Length: 149
Image (cartoon, rainbow, N blue to C red; front, side, top):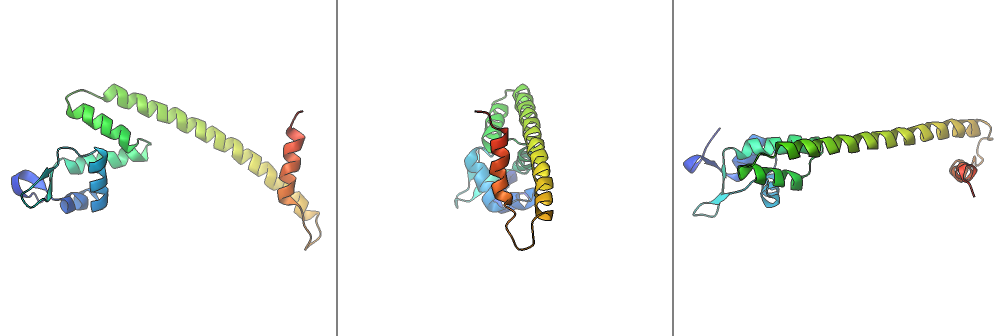
C-alpha cells in the first residue's frame, strides 16, 4: 500500500486499491461513508488508509441490500464510539424478510406467466398461420373470468 504524507492516500490511490472509480470515492465521501477527509495545502483530498477497507465493506453491504444512507448512519454511529451491531442486524433481518416477500411475489408471477404461456401455446397451435391469435387480448379474458362483481 503506497501511503502519501502522514499516512494518508490520495483519491486515485484509494480508488485503485478499493477497485472503484475516483467518482465513486468522491460520491461515498459526499454520502458520508468516508468522513474526516483532509485537504492538503494544494487542496488535494487526503484519505486515511482505512478508507479502502471502508469502501470494500460498503460495496459488499450494498450487494446484500444496504443503502448508502443506511451505511453512512451506521459508520457515523461506529465512528462516535457507539456499537451499531444490533441495528445492523435489525436492518439485515428486515432486508431478508423483504427479499423473501419479493421472491414469493415473483414466484407467483412466474406461475401465472407459465400458465399464460401454456394457454398461448394452445391458441397458437389452433390458429391458422398468418392470422391473429389474440394473445394479448386473451389477458383481458383471463382477468375478467377471475373477477367478481
